[in-house]
Length: 429
Image (tube, rainbow, N blue to C red; front, side):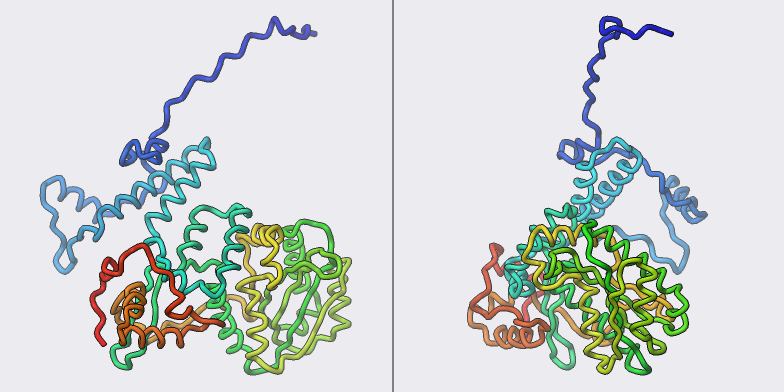
């Protein structure tokens, strides 16, 4: 056998050579305005029309067949260039496994800045988020603690930006249109999602016999993510049980988690709306115990009020926690981490394939025309304009929130002058 080498026999390790900064790093730091053509692995296959267009460009002519409009330049060349450079950088990251997490975060933030319209003004934030300011700050802190991406945090922060006042051409009805984050932890966006789900569930359970079923797992000390995986796995097995297949034809399930008031452990359970025949609670309890091995806690009741049952269950689909958990930063951050990338509601059986969040397009939407920015309307109302005050009061009455937007005197004034927010023209009484 070879002798064990001594420290004197081991050659010294040469220091790693210093590496020049890459083009992507220079692009992010602003040292170079654009990335070089680094290519991509997802090139679109060239068609016959693409080859013909390339030959025409080489010959100095760019003619299109009769009946087809010629290509036009983008409305904002700078925005188009920003999107193209960001896409190139994302492709470069995909081809370089040595890229760090900071590189990915920088690329995602650059992409969001290219696509997100603009930071929200103070008046726009007050209009949409004034009724939950304190809880919103706690939610944002928990999102940071949970490691949410910079792009998601930026969308959450500027939810409601670009708010525009629109008036119906015929009826004179008013509304506000803006850019929203659609995040499940944003209370206004979650309420809108829950309302859509409630309408779809109610439309399906108004006729026939339907049941409200609750399935609960035994409390344990496992991480919350593992407990959620566990209850989903057990529910999948339950749907294959002979008792379930004989009585249930379809339905939907909603996840809810909150700390137990008895022992402080996570209380993970599913709220179900099922269609079919009656389920005996004792038989279902035995089947659930056979599936889980340690829990027989179930609840079965007939649905008498379709509207109340739909609203009670759908609110869990938008936000899976109770009102008390939001005031505990560590628990809220754990729920966010455990539910990121998961579906909080699902359909099964005859309901499978039905989108619970689907909403039919409003046929009157095309008749609403923009008249001014919300920031300008508030500024004019504060200055004493009678039409602006009347329109603002009508918009406040239209808002579907528990406390509504704040009163006129409670709006914060933005740092942007109102004269700079009149891109859409002057409203007419």
